[in-house]
Length: 317
Image (tube, rainbow, N blue to C red; front, side, top):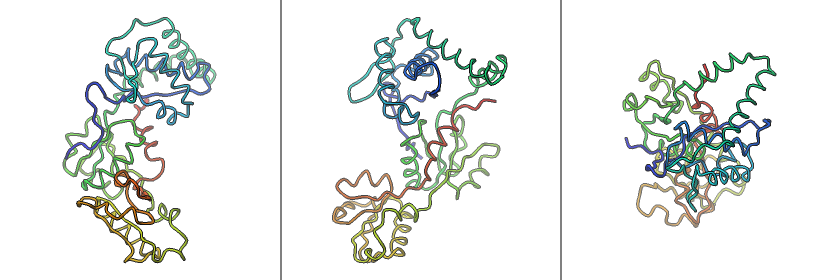
């Protein structure tokens, strides 16, 4: 099965570097941004041509003010570590500048802050050093592998994860994943968990939490007494989505004859949907419905992407 995750060429690969920030540190968050990117470049974790996370993405993920991230990126550009491309992002330069004393000073301060904090907790320096070494020695995951035999459902799940997960995501069907599981964090949906575990004995398989579709739709629907006669669209490439959504809407009091059910794999499927009061659809289909009011019914529960980001960081043994 083709890889449905994001792709980048050598000049525009998304950075897979892992960031962490200490908000209560004596070291400013701007300096922490600068130090981590600089160290990532020096260690080879950030390769020439890799694109750093956007200012908005980094700020949102770690609860940092966007101006702080922007200031850090500007300093990195002034020092020669990165280059910004208008409308595209910030990229690691092909050549490295000489390491400046200021960057080394920031590293020293970050390390000193770590040891100060652990000493206050009564942890021996030798134990901290061993833990740091163990953390650094752990191999990271290169990608997330979603095992899902239904390609349309798989594409929807990938689209939902890709909004916030920082690793690239690939899809594999049953029997296709064994050779692709190396260096991958394997995930699947609850209904497939037992089979995937049986096909990958000894491997960790993470089960993605799913949401209650009726609950996710309820907050968007009009009051029960005003539902009859409303023209409502239902659109998706996934046949089960069309079936489930239609069944739930009829059960919720909508007229079956007033539902415009559209298979998004068919030609001209968008026609007339702008006339509907709303179109119930999945995240992927919503991106193709310009001009229509959409109600996106998601597969995954809230917080799943954030959970994955935490799990795919190398564990400390």
